[in-house]
Each structure stands twice: as structure tokens, then as C-alpha cells.
Image (cartoon, rainbow, N blue to C red):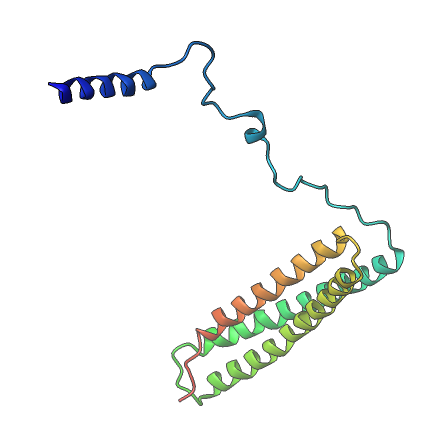
Length: 167
């Protein structure tokens, strides 16, 4: 009986400890400090100042890129025509050899684009090494040169598929 009373008193004490005290309870919502972001704030890209010397170089590279594209397109039209004529011909035939020669010339034409792309990349790398902002016109020219190079490679691959592989 005594144990039963001790148990009931202990149980009452424990249950009383669980009872809520009078007054305000702390909120479970996030506190204001917990809602703040500690991420690095977005900073606007600094604008490049006018650079007349770079503008001249960009114009020269743009002209070289256009010239390379024109020469490549002419050579690609000829190589495409010759490769279509060689379709189905065996390796070593006259039409096959003519197509292979045209393809090799076409690859040489593409190297002019690759060289111009390398020159444009060098201009961009030099600016980055100096820690100056990206020059928008140079960036657009670089993207155009990369696209032209990639497109020319794909065109050569497409023309090459018309010609039988060497035995």
C-alpha cells in the first residue's frame, strides 16, 4: 500500500511537471535572424570602357573570320559535289581520289577559321589576365568564331560520309 502511495505521488509530480506554466510560450516560427540570407550578394558585371585599339583588333579578326567563312563555303560546295559524284565508288577510283583531294583542301580551309579562333581567344585571355571586364564585342566575336569552327567541322564530317573509306 505504501508503495502504491509513493507511486501515485511520484506520478502526480511527473504529470505536474508536464503542465504548462501560465504566460506566453516561445513561438516555433523561425526567428528574424534565421530568415536572413548569408549568401554573397549579387554584384553587377562591371562594364568595359571603350578601347579603340581593341576595337581595331576585333574588326581585323572579324574580317579574317568572314574571309575564312567565304573561302570555306566555296571549297565545301566543290567538295560536296565531288563527294556526291564519288558516292558508291570504290576507294582508289578517280572520283574517289578527286573527292579525297577536295576534302583535304577543305580541311586546310577550315584551319583558317581555327587560326582566327585561336587569335580571338588569345585577345580574350589577355584581357582576363589583366583583370579587366569582358569586352562585349570581343565576346560576341569569340562566340561567332566558335560556332563557325564547329559548323565547319560538322560540314566536313557530313561530306566525308559520302565517300567510301580507304581500304
